Structures are given as structure tokens and as C-alpha cells.
Amino acid sequence: MTIAGSTYFRFGLLLAATVTVATWPRPSAAYTPEQQQACSPDAMRLCSAFIPDVDMITACMIRNKAQLSPPCRVFFGPDPEERRERRRRARPEY
Image (cartoon, rainbow, N blue to C red; front, side, top):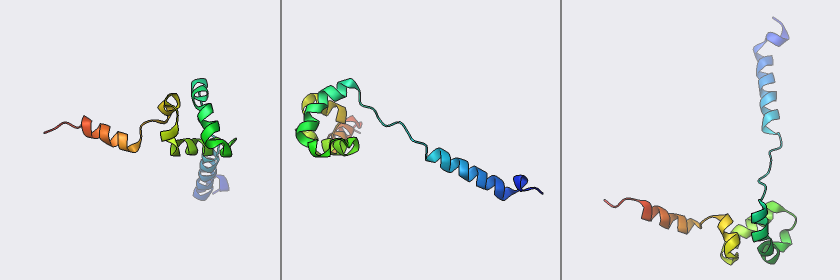
């Protein structure tokens, strides 16, 4: 039996391919021009210490959602409490 035909070689090849694909860079979530326009002033006001780290700015904005301007707050979705309330209202009453 040749090395290329062995089970261990095939397993190693499959493992190497899996690791390669898993570590490929992924495209980051790009912000739309509308999101940038609506949220840039809030980012500067609330999270300027984290510039230029987009992930840290996003986390900061989520933490400070109550202080965001209404046009920017739209892009961050409802609070967990708001979601719970919506789900409660959406359930049928028996």
C-alpha cells in the first residue's frame, strides 16, 4: 500500500484542508454609509477612546445604547427587555 492510499494520509489531508478553510479571513461586517452617517457623532461622543478599533467601538455603542441618538439606535436593535416584552405580547392568550 502506498502512502497516498493510506487512511492516515487521507485523514491528515482532510484535517489540513479543514484547518486551512477554517482560518481563511472572513469579510468583516461593513457598515453602510447610512449607518456611518447616523452613528459617527455618537461614536465620537461616547466611544472616542476606542477609535480606530471598530469591534471595541461597536461594543461601546451597545453598552451605551440608551445614550445613542434615535437615528443611530435603530441600527442596534431592541434591548433584551424590549424583546422579552414583544415576545410576551406576541404569544396567544389561552
